Length: 211
Image (tube, one colour):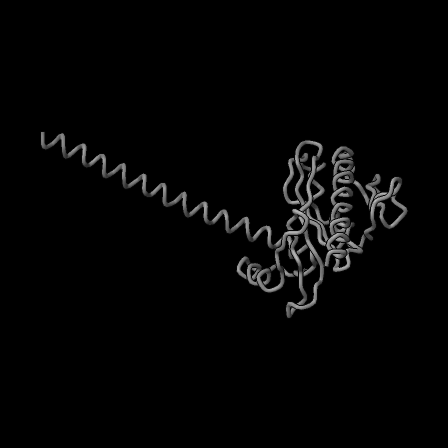
């Protein structure tokens, strides 16, 4: 009887120990994942606002820079990140999430615009399921850097903010190179990003009128 009781207690303690260990590891992993996601988002925001430039700061430095030079606000039911110059007084620009349907699934990105919302400072696409080597190239620097400096204006019936053309065929400053071999992805990005930019400009004007 005693041996049986000992076995039961022993198994219970062993199970409790390993269950506690698994729970602790899971908790630590979840916390680390959350921190990594936070740093990733903040790095993207700082990059599209042009605050980091060519720097490659550590995660701790990113958290510090973001805390000093970015303020998160909610405007027209949209999260907007306000970027400031060093010293925290002069607004450099605004960053905001963008997204829409891609060729194979949703695409998520971030856009930075200058303080007057007159031109694009930077753009990044950080989550998508587009084809590697084709549509997935929207995340590559050669593609995203084309948007820097593109002028912003309200979309008219026959004029978009930008167009994605077959590589090398663009003539106007707002005619950018699409991804060769990924026409579906290029069309999707052109459609939802023009729409999101136009919506932001409308919200921006509304905020100015209220302010």
